[in-house]
Length: 279
Image (tube, rainbow, N blue to C red; front, side, top):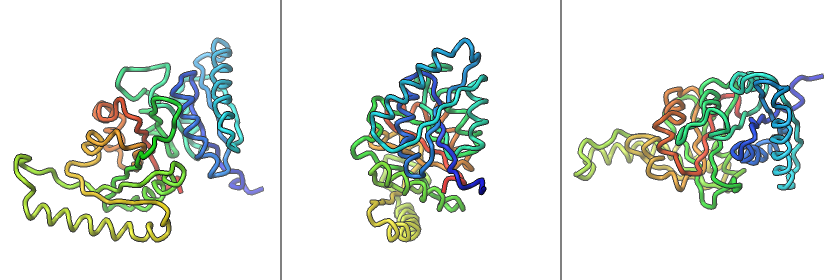
């Protein structure tokens, strides 16, 4: 039997929190489009002591998923061990791991939880860090933001963004970082404006192929002075998902660290970290 015939599962970290249930709801569409099972994964420090909590947390998640009436196969798994190590282990055979931005344990107000942060930088598959304030996993009009540069991962990031746009009925905003103006009291210089024009023209050429292949997905390009984090700081209310590459470790750490948490605090903006395994 071909070992690749069975789709790898979408693994969701369950800990009894509302954030975990929202992550499970967000992950349903990821599983459906791949024809993959949705695995509800509970890691207990001591399985005997947390048996009831694990059962209740998983039962709540199943109830919420079944209420969507979407055709997804649900699996459950309870393991004994720390959440971070257990989920990192599960990521080796998963198509994606999804967790809430914060959970019941290791919580610090205004910060991404320790489990989500560790998965973001060390998981062996794509990671969805889900941040919503209620059970609506799709915010009306929320866009998907992806920052592009000259790296080989650009095609992978765009492909992931296009897939998510189809799943979540969202537009894509592809941004390209530009050096910040030296003196914000004055308009951008002619040279800076020309640099922005050329950067956008190059970005539009790269987007053209994707637009032809996916005419139903709206894609826009914009030059951002200062980069992704600055853009999110001012536009977080309109962004539903940020797509970043796993190879850009510095950017990933910024998004899940204090600066990114401050930028995305009180927003409904989730983060998807992708790599070559995503497509």
